[in-house]
Structures are given as structure tokens and as C-alpha cells.
Image 1 (cartoon, rainbow, N blue to C red):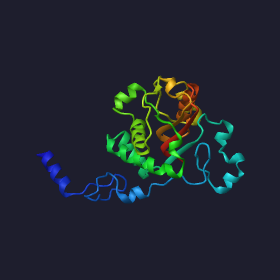
Image 2 (image 1 turned 135 degrees about the horizontal axis):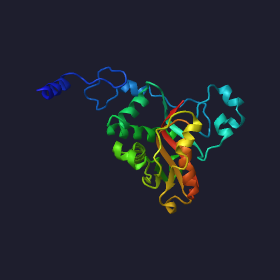
Image 3 (image 1 turned 60 degrees about the vertical axis):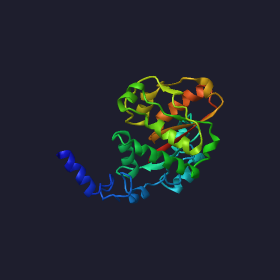
Image 4 (image 1 turned 180 degrees about the vertical axis):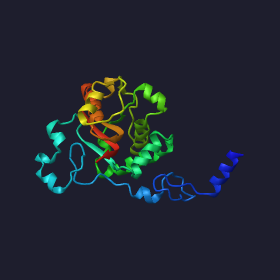
Length: 245
């Protein structure tokens, strides 16, 4: 009886948007309303040309030697460039969409977010300069627990849109790591030596685009890039769905 009542209420009452809680359009097959999607922001200019970190102002950019952020000047990353499709904002649409995708079991959200990545890349770089998309891997135990790797699902959607292949198992996480938290040194220590390339011959001499959901300090992306470059990759760039400001 409870199940029947719940089904009837679902038919009568529109579901709320998972961001603003306003009723969703009954014809719109989404968990987030169009208004909230439209408020998702790109990473604001100006930003570091290497890692994509936003500068607080144009003046800060002009006063920065080489126009690079302090972190990239002090310790240049292994990856060539990093870009993100959107800004990761507390309480924002992209953050809520990622939570629904990764922890809420809403795999359809991954398709939507992957298509968003594919669309937004045009204003950031030329996708077809890369030979292969490489998703950031989860440790096998974490992937079994979650049931999927969010980076792989995003990469497959992006690859489908761009006509590029995905090397889903070429990069492996060989050491279980804690969920990334804390400052940059702690994050770097957490993932140090955690990745290896399964088939070096498939990355040798190739330009690779590393795909992940969120870029925070870049510690994970940098460690992945080191492993790929050590295996002979010609270049590794990074593209994520979102970037923490």
C-alpha cells in the first residue's frame, strides 16, 4: 500500500530540483532544473595558463612572472596544461550534480556531465590534437565498492562526442589511497607512486588527455602524468569536469 501511494504521489506531484528544490517540469527528464543548469559558471578569466587556477584579478595576472600562478612557478607540474569545463562552487549546480552522480547512484547524470565537458572544451583547447583519452583510475577495491569509475564514464561520453578512443585500463592505481583532503603536500604524499601504466607501448609517443571529475590542487593529475610520461607518452594534458577555485 505504501509503495502504491508513493507511486501515485509521484504522478500527481512534480519532483523537486535537487539544487533549488523548485518543482521540475514534468516533461523535463532531469534531476536539476534548467534555471540551475544555466547558473553553472565556467572557470573565470584570467587563469593560470598552465594549471588553470583563476587569478583573483587581472592585476594579479599582470604582476605574476610569466603569467603563471605561484604553485606552477615554484613546482612546475608534469602535465602540459589543465583545463576544466566548469567552476566547482559550494552549494552550486555542478557540485550537486557530481554528488548525485558519484554517490547517489544517478549514472544518467554522468552522461549529462560528459556531454557538458564535450561542449565546453571548444573554447578551451582543440580536442583532436590528442590521440587518446585516459581516465584517472580508482583502486580496484574502491571501484568494486562504488560499482563504477566516474572518470571512465565521463571519458567515454567525451570520447563518443569527439570521436576519440578511451584507454580505460591503460593507467592503473596500484596502491589504495585515502580520499584526497588537506593541503597540497599531504595530497601529493597520499598519491605518490600510486599509479602505473599497464601497457606502455600503447601510450609511447602519444599525446594523452587525462580525464577526471574534479581538479583541486592537481596532485592526483600530476602523479598520473608522471607515470604516463615515464612510460613514454609525448605529452599529457588534463581536462576535468570542474575546478575548485
